[in-house]
Length: 77
Image 1 (spheres, rainbow, N blue to C red):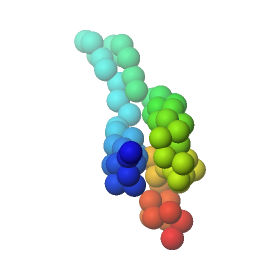
Image 2: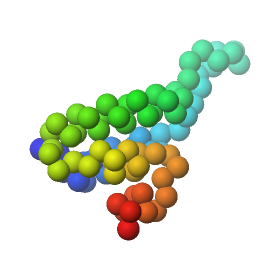
Image 3: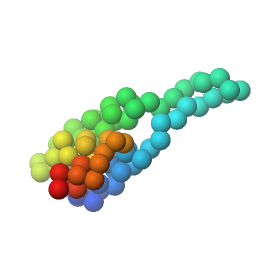
């Protein structure tokens, strides 16, 4: 079973993954927008909730948000 440390590490990766755009000869060919980051966070949260009944989806999603503040990262404390 995954632990709080695992969930925190994954949320950090999601939060800190930069939005980027791949280009070829200066022309955008693909990008990784925030909407994809959010969809991935939601899907992971659903899977984690199935694995661990004590998993707090709301807390995870706040922690995965790139605009998270200190309170979000510390469970509202």
